[in-house]
Image (cartoon, rainbow, N blue to C red; front, side):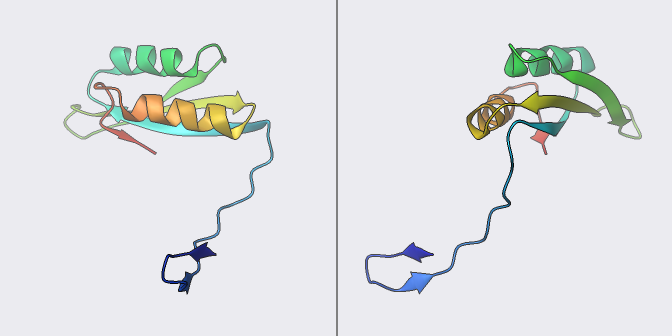
Length: 94
């Protein structure tokens, strides 16, 4: 529960329990496949990441890559997500 200054209580949404280390996957979408791959490898370093092409848009403008790796803890998992999210080559990250 979250307490507010006026002492009203509001329940917060429950977060799933994640046991670390664990395998984690990010779906990364952007326009340039090569640049996306380089961005993913850099964001996940020094951890080894497996990257596979997931999908391309019907006109071929956007590409979706699946990045899979073992993350040792929540800090690393969130750092990778934030690094990918702020990259100019990434349009969407799931």
